[in-house]
Length: 318
Image 1 (cartoon, helix red, strand yellow):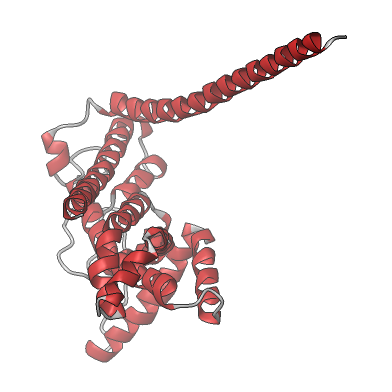
Image 2: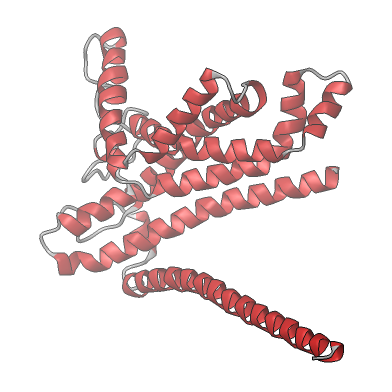
């Protein structure tokens, strides 16, 4: 075999290898793209099925009226109002605490310190606890513990805060969604270049001023991402509020922090499991599910718009 034959064989072998690599790349790209389309199709099928079965019952009266006895007539406005108020209270409670924990873990603590390791372990364990356990925790700690103590100290033992209420349900959901906010915010803070911190402190700013005026504005979009994930998780949870505030049938709107409330997720659970006439409540059930999805998407959309505007302002400032 001469040198020219050997070179030609090596070139043909390299060409076949490149061809095999190209086919593998195309196959892998097709499989990953198919997986993405499967996810999109699943969402479209779920939303489409719910919208198809619930469209006949959707009306302005259904959205603005209170339910009637038996749950087969009336509307779901108290449940819509209760869900929105619950999510707002939960967000007010969880975002400041989660952001402060993330700031301490990323900006102040050493990754080899005991408090960092213990806190990270606690966050990991919180993320893995079943939601029904949070409901039992909220009943024992918030309702009976804190609420009962408030009643004994300020109300002479009269039952006011020591019972299921919207404030205890919101705080229970805040504990449930706390790991989401902490982990998302910490990842965002870690992604901010250290050069920004060093430049700020080199100009004479303190650690506090650097965090408040340099780091947090850059991390605002990531913090809102954690808020969006927390809202999505909290709006659909039912188990934690079973024991801490949700009511089976309550046409009145909650007007105090110690009031009980109706909630869309719990209302769906009641309609699907406790109704004596399943066929009569099925259209109401689908319509309520559709409203819950729409409300969750709306709350997420508001947070996404705020995040987008903050990113635009940061780009302009840069």
